[in-house]
Length: 150
Image 1 (cartoon, one colour):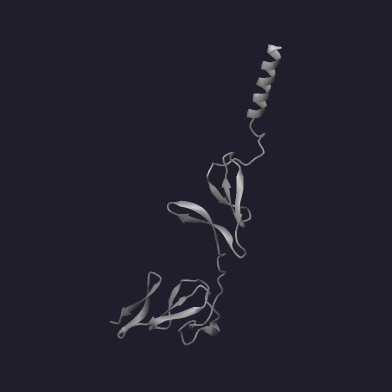
Image 2 (spheres, rainbow, N blue to C red):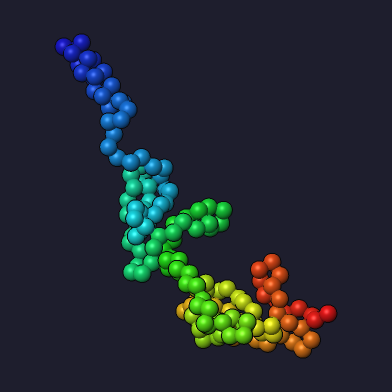
């Protein structure tokens, strides 16, 4: 009897320890990730299983973003699809004008040689201001500045 119990316990522990028999996706407790597809956020629970924290609101997607030295999942607006500005919209080399559509919210650009504009959160160009007298708009490292005329 003692031999039988020892044999059963040994076989049971061997089967439980056999690699490849576990069906769950192991993870590290307390870590977060985006679901697949990127429609929500999951957390690894105390039993090393992924659990849904919540779905992203309609119109948003889960994106991994840097935060305080870590990369964490956040529900964000999907990236805007850049749309090329039609050549007809360029007026005398000034480029697109305030009120016209733009593709990258927060991006500043020269509005002609003497002014600056910005793409707002609705992807519409907004006039920022004219350059001061005796200056012009020029790009320095890809950012528009009003610089002194020489």
